[in-house]
Length: 274
Image (cartoon, rainbow, N blue to C red):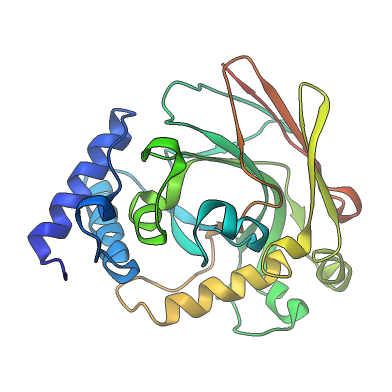
């Protein structure tokens, strides 16, 4: 069943209330089985308008479910995107940050590669050409959350629900220059990232998990946005986090998580939850 405008507005209102009060709610598709991904993006647009009206400022985008090794586990078989905001992005100082666990619902942590753009992204399958639009790359921890109990949802549900975005911690930037662009392009698909909790290794993941390369995840998003005229295309100044290199792991207060980026040469992150 197609939703009319008032239906979509009501869905956006419920999702914002769940976000702002750290509450859970039933998946949208539980009561509206026909709720589609296209309608989910319409809800996301309504959420964007309301957040802007409340003084929130978008800083860029997050891409989710780019790691195809996780699709069967979560029952979502396509990537999606959502905004990241001035109120959700945190810049780590000397590679370290702390976050309160309380504001998040069923939070999990994801090690990612973050890009800052200096130009629109070229629609190209050549990572070297893609990186010509990138000012820097950095380590990132995205804190994702599910307002739907037990992380049970469809692609449409999680797209509408802020793309599951809770927070993004950004590490020390590595400038992309004419001197290192080719090396970065070649390394992004093959490097191995590590994720540790309390100094103990939890999981490793390679760059190719993310749509064959985090650089190609940027291309995917640029291509998706070209078919969504209701949203602006990627532009200079935006930061884009490209999806988790490992599984998403639950976090608890008092835990300290850290990441390493191996041969990619990025300084990893350490985040403590309080």
